[in-house]
Length: 114
Image 1 (cartoon, rainbow, N blue to C red):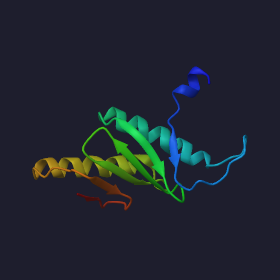
Image 2: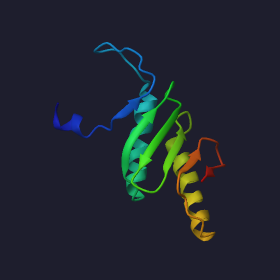
Image 3: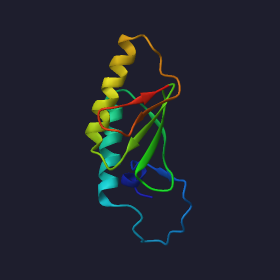
C-alpha cells in the first residue's frame, strides 16, 4: 500500500457481493462524493469513524465521532447534504435539542433527527 492509498477513505459494503481484482465496483461520481463529503465534514470538525453502504451505494451511513450518525443520499451533491447538515445543527442548537442517534439527510431541504 502506498502513502497515497493510506489516505483514501474506506467504505464498508454491506452487500457482500463478490469482487475480482481490477473490477470497477463504484461509479467515479461516488468516489468524488466521498472525497467531497469527508473533506466537508472534517472542515466542520466532524470526525469519521466509519463509512458504510448497504445494498446499493445510494445510501451512505457515516458513523461520526459525535453522539450521532449521518445518513446521506449519494445521488445528491455532497455540498447539498452538507448545507442541510449545517441547517439541522443550527436549528437543534437554537432549540437546545440534542441529537443523540442520527441525522437523516437523504431528502433535499428536509432532515430527520433523533
